[in-house]
View 1 (spheres, rainbow, N blue to C red):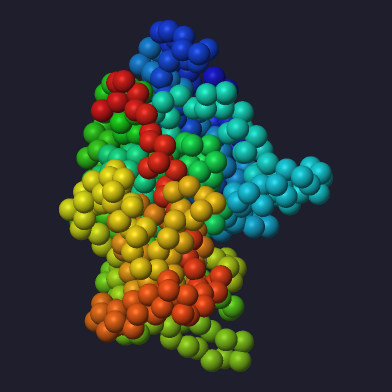
View 2: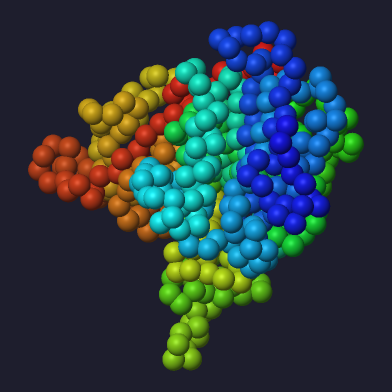
Amino acid sequence: MSGFDPHNPDRWQRVVGDVVGEVRGEVRGEREGPTLVCVGGVHGNEPAGVLASARVVERLAASPGVLRGRFLALTGNLRALRRGDPALRYQARDLNRAFTDEAIADAQGAPPHARDPEQAEVAELVTELVGLLDGAGFPAGSALLDLHTFSSPGAPFAYVEDSLPARRLGLALGLPLIVGLDEELRGLLADYATNRLGLPSLVVEAGLHEDPGAVAVHESAVWVTLETLGMIGDADALAGFDARALLRGRAGRQAGRFYDIRHREPEGDPPVEMLDRARAFTRVWKGLTPVAVRAHADGRRRVLRAAADGILFMPNRQQRKLPADDAYFILRPIWRRFVGVSGWLRQRAWAHRLLAALPGVRPDPDRPHTLLVDHDVAALMARDILHLFGYRVVRSGPSPYRRWPTRAVMAVWVLGRALLRVGGVLPTGRDEIWVVRRHRLDVEGFPRPENSR
């Protein structure tokens, strides 16, 4: 084990700790059991995840024989953390938007002396993660935790991609579970780990940056995940407290709820200032609920109102903002029975054939598990039906939020236009086609370890 030394002036190290369970048998040269990779501090003002993973490393190292598999804890934005500035999320670019194929290639292709700080972090983290792979990939049941905190008061929550294996991992925590963020943002570390490494990923947002209780939330999430993956027997015994109860208590009324991202609002230029009344997980109405103010250089102050009906989420109160940052999101609550129906449909081949046979929808002849969807049909169904069947929007045209009564009125002419396009009467441009694809984990599955719960 290499480790984290809180007494070291240069305390932030890439490898917080690496604990490997006892070998009880060799399978293709692998140690027995899953691998859980834990990454904290992807933003420089979010050290809570690193501190929490250091606690877990210390307890696991002091309890030989309890761990089945491997627990590796890494620091994300090492250079920003070492600056010691509580307002510094990143130096040149947001590291949690830098894990696209293009950005990774740029970072790896640049000479080390020419990389900006976040490019250096990307190159080093990707090397670390890819180095964990062998010819057979990660052991069955492996996963990645990405630990964050946020800037505005609200309940802690978890985010996963909307695949069935990732859902199971997220629901085990009992925190409010958010899906759909991967459709709004590119370059997430969790998205890269899932879709490039085949490693189901769970993002945990534990509370305010400055809240010391966020460390306990992260620690609880790590213990529960270790138990869920079958890597330890009793999370509470190792933690020294009831980890699930702590998570439920911090989540409060939001515990166990399920939400889908409905709208993302960028900061813009100049960035907006969130109103005091704009609190996370509060109800907002399109065009009616004031949420922010944009102050212009000429002294004008324009009040911005919610861009959709739903639940306000992650209002940005960071001290430093860039125009491309997120101002806020709006969520749509999902009925848990709907989640169950979705899980059943995704596993039925006939259901996917039925979806592909709808007017304006057709399979992509060049890419498996991918559909091409006429924009008018997509606008009518929004993402609800696509998500029900487990499809992620890869490329889309503009689709402004509309309430259900408006959608119902639109249905007649929208489906008529779609049928005319299918019949070749109306042309269809590239920008009028949405590309939607099934989640990799829904297609390939997620083999569970034998001892998982």
